[in-house]
Length: 463
Ligand code: MLT
Ligand code: ZN
Image (cartoon, rainbow, N blue to C red; front, side, top):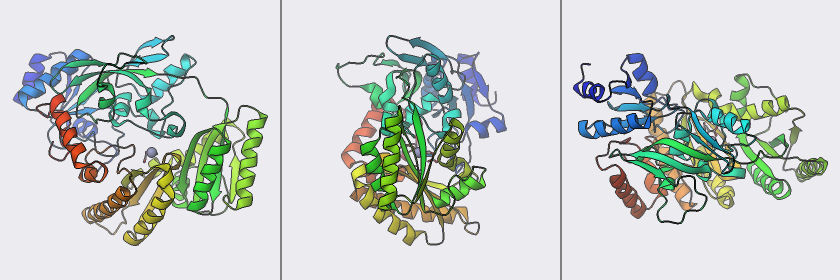
């Protein structure tokens, strides 16, 4: 091993799997953002908590930064290693460790893929309700590190709500066992919640105990075509009042074009500017009649132009693909992504201002919107025109993001709803958090990671 620091790591942990081939450095050094050139020192693939702990202790002694790494499906650069860091991939720690039927919890290693968590919960007649399109690749450790949200937040909340306990290795190599699966625990600061959403800057999740719940009742999936944004909020209010929603997701005609070009099936003929995919409980005939009545009312009011209810599981999946396939359909264009949120009550006023801002600032640029409108969360994807150089494009997007951040600030919103701050949004943290809060965040980081070895440069530009 030519690097003395790596030689020392191998001496401390002779059994550790370590990768240094260029292909591996590239693969593990990037996430879905694809903006930075990966340049890690090496990739470590520990197989136990003890190995993770030993790596963190080595990193402190050798002054090496660590990038904790899960499925690397992140969209904010939180798992990018572009500065000679050691990538600590948790992918080999991917097992279910325990199911407790009384507590209704599943204890897992951090590298387990979300889909495998869903399958394990289902095999016990229960569900882990956090869900989103990256379920086949993202890992639970990454979900916890970003407090991932997704398509069922409207019903079940974010990842935060479903973590009964975590074990973490802090920046100085201590193992903490936080909350231990307790339902009630009023014994001081809840460090478990502090770890959730900390983007690998306070600790590395090495084990998690997840809460499970009963599967929802039979549901129906409906696709709606809408004439304008005002109608969107009217339909949302109507459906939320009359139905028990499991999801309420929106996308625009531009998003639809991309997803259709990517192989999805058109479900509604004609061109409409906005679409909603909604899923709601439909336990019996009465619930189904209520959904139909709500749809007809929306049609009479002119809030909905057309709609279709899935008649089979296959059709429901096809309708969901129209929404869930958007990210993949745009991936080759490497969109500049904004992921913003405001309180639901602030959505109409914010949307109006935001629409005007984007129309003014991106006159020649394609902007694709979609998102979790029922949670007040919008994804704004900006596509680089072929004739605009990458650098100039990013500069323009950063300028608009600054304006967007100011608009969000006026509406009390957040510059990152569910993707995290990472590298992409760290320049805008002050628009979302007060100076006093940021100072405390930095102080907390110092306590948990005094030498700043965990994911430096993410969240805060200066470590
Ligand atoms: C989604 O809602 O599909 C995800 O947040 C991914 C994305 O924003 O591209
Ligand atoms: Zn999303």
